[in-house]
Amino acid sequence: MPRRCILPACLLLAGWAAASCGQDHGAVPADRESIELRAAGTPPTVEAAVVAEAVDGGMLLELDDGRYLLAHPGDVISRRPLPEAATAETPRQLGERVLAELPPGFELLLTRHYVVCYETSRDYAKWCAALFERLHEVFLNFWSRAGIELTPPPRPLVVVIFSDKAAYEAHASRDLGAAADRVVGYYNLMSNRVTTFDLTETDGLTGTGAGSAGTANQIMASPAAAGLVATLVHEAAHQMAFNSGLHRRLAPVPLWVSEGIAIYFETPDLAASGGWRGIGPPNRPRLDHFLAHHRHGDLVAIISDDDRFRAVESPLDAYAGAWALTRYLVEAKKTKFIDYLRRQSLKQPLADDSSTARLREFEAAFGASAEAVEQEVVKAAARLQTSLRGR
Ligand SMILES: [Zn+2]
Image (cartoon, rainbow, N blue to C red; front, side):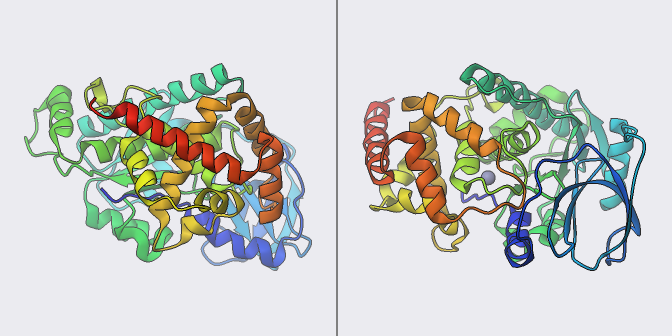
């Protein structure tokens, strides 16, 4: 099924950053401030940490619940330091605040690491939450075994599940604009939330009393099951990457890296309980797409800049290329890839990288030209496809 993920806030912010944020001021400070604002659509006063500050007075703020807020130059009326640390919100308080922003009819499911706001049946939400929890554990274990110690997310991760595509699209259009009808789930870098809907359209077909086993069977029997699993795992992987220190939100991490990792994790396994066994199975749709559509220079292009991901006509080629490149680097150049990821994790919000700097950084990290790596990726993908034939 056609599916793409976009990080809309990143695109919106890029213009502002390029236009007025000339420099980045380092890591998130521990100190919080009380900041009085005059911008429409924001509370008059917020308590937040300043993540980045531009020379003209524009600021990127992190609220206590992890949401980012952008204050344009001229929005800030006053600032004063807060003497005390934030009092942590309980997951229920966080969830109830998110519910208040949603249309009527949503309920709350609290799991170990997630606050799920759902409009579906509770059994459907529980099935999704079980997948998120499994991804949460597998994600941290995978990178730990690979040599990167990530920090478990400091607060519960918020997921919003609509029951109905039309209601989802109406809500998502605030973030995605006209793309809302083409994007079936997304992670928003500003709100830090994953939003999606019941892709299988099976929820409630058996009425009440189906139970969790009945709901699971119903979901897995749907033709949309593979797309559902891939979407949920993909978006949850983005959310984990940006909340565990693998990348920082709004930092200039190449999209091939963030998308390649999310796609590397997403591969469904419908024979497994819950539709996903973990990391490892080759992503056949991405592999086949890559080999069918790859043209010389495609990977050098996505290594250099993110334009191909934003192109209306060819984003699927870029996503398939990101998967093939990531898989090759994980399998064949793991130590260098991990070192490269460590460097990406240090990049600061609203910093900027030129395409020349990106290309140079990639070639230095892997000790080869991007063209040479691209040739190796194509050969590895072709070998993988051959090995999978007949299975
Ligand atoms: Zn994505």
